Length: 359
Image (cartoon, rainbow, N blue to C red; front, side):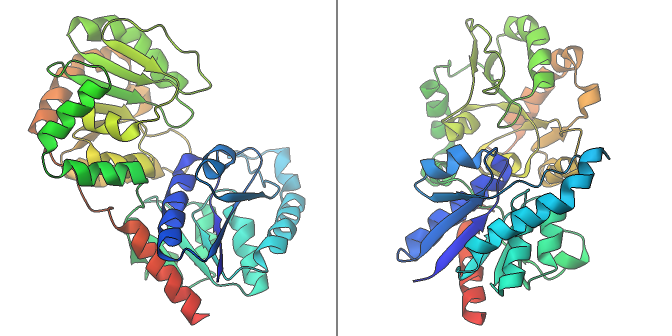
């Protein structure tokens, strides 16, 4: 029996792929023990226990995007986090990291303890934690080709899909038209009305929400139905005929299937799930970070299944004027989803098993 530790916390973009691989690992190696590393402030505190896995917390190393006096605390916080990680990782057989704040101290701890490590990078532009981890191990996987010396020999696996998205793809493959029509009905929308699904990430987006509010009357006047995920931390607007706001979407696969156009951030997980089940997307990359969200959507733009617009250009006037053409392009897009990420979790498990055997 092996002990496998998964490191990837903070946002759903790090946690969901880790959970997908953990489930696949447990299915193929049920005797193995699986543990997750996280911090007390991340979404992993909700998502990981909900899937039946044990979550162990370590101190967070917070690094502001802009220079500040908080940077003076980084060395002390990092040492504390490495010590806490080492106490957990030293007895493991393999560490699998997916990036984020929790991964860097986990990678360093595994290196100190001599524990084999596997790194998976979901984004087209890797973050600093995975760049660090990829320098410490020969076992590196990427969702898509990534520029950079550390990822030159990485295994291209795709991005692991959540089980509900993967199952929805398999179930829809027999008749995509019927599946999309059924999904729209299950969400409570008319089959013949175009449906726009709008979301701003796992926490929602105040910027996107405000533009939806400004353009709502004009969109409804066009007989367009709207399914709007505002985020748990934002005020839930009042629903009206044709407009259904929710704090969070539990049936995400249904929302992807049902929608004619999806308006969202272009996080790696969103792009992957959309590719599997969606038809056409308008992506608004998050205007902070290292630019990875712009690059994440590149493949879908090249396939004519998406358009990208900067947040500074996304306003109510643009949305109302562009929506008809976006719907038209959706109807011209393939009705079937893309299976490219369907077996990503299994590929990463196989690489992990190879890493265990090589240790």
